[in-house]
Image 1 (tube, helix red, strand yellow):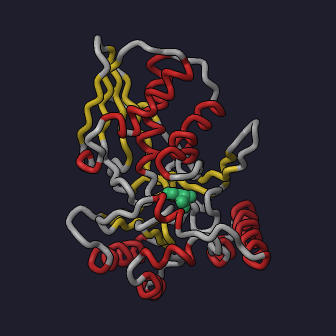
Image 2 (cartoon, helix red, strand yellow):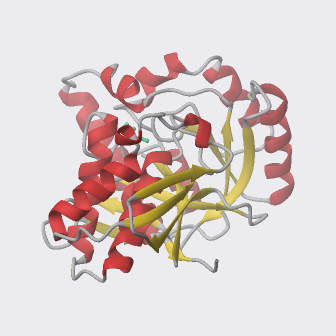
Length: 310
Ligand code: HSE
């Protein structure tokens, strides 16, 4: 049997809409990501369990793991029936790369099981197409970090569509999912179709300065330029009290508060564990709406998707 774990991820990272993404892992070792296991079988089977399996569509043909298998078997001509188990640990529509986690774990598990010769670039492209089929637009900022780990810059270059960036090792990433969902396609559809020249210049300046700050390890500069002019100004209307929350977290000593991917998860960066714990407690008290929601203190997951022991 093969079992693959694929971590949660933060799309956009507050400054790079559709082109920056970070894989994350809770510092308390909670498994925040989906797992896919595969066994040989006489008939095709897909079984789902895990905390968030009730979020999945009842119709198997709408399940992303099933779609992934269809695409995969068509592309590689592998038809041998298999039994797939999807452990759905990630809430759907949370902004934490839930669909990417299922897609990456599925595609890598199929790839290992069928021992195909697909290249890393071909696998990423396939993951991106699958992501696009459910979110209303191909974007790699969740699948790439989820697959390869770390902070990834999506270049879409034909030879190497994604590049790993340096990180600040001391940054703690607090993520808070309130327990309610926002569909990625809804959050994409509210964005304008066109942007002014000033906004484009501002966005290029923010992103390039942020990347310069990563390479020169200037943490304070990176934080100041972690500002999105493309998506966040429009999406804050989907997050109740966003500005109030941001002000409160900054007062507690957090460096930032941004939307993770298409939301409603928020992420905040802190430099030390005592501030991170205060931010976590505040978010638990003020942002979580029900007993499904959660807050985790995370670090960057440098490993990405990986085989795990059964
Ligand atoms: N870049 C994507 C978006 C991420 O913001 O729509 C979705 O999680």
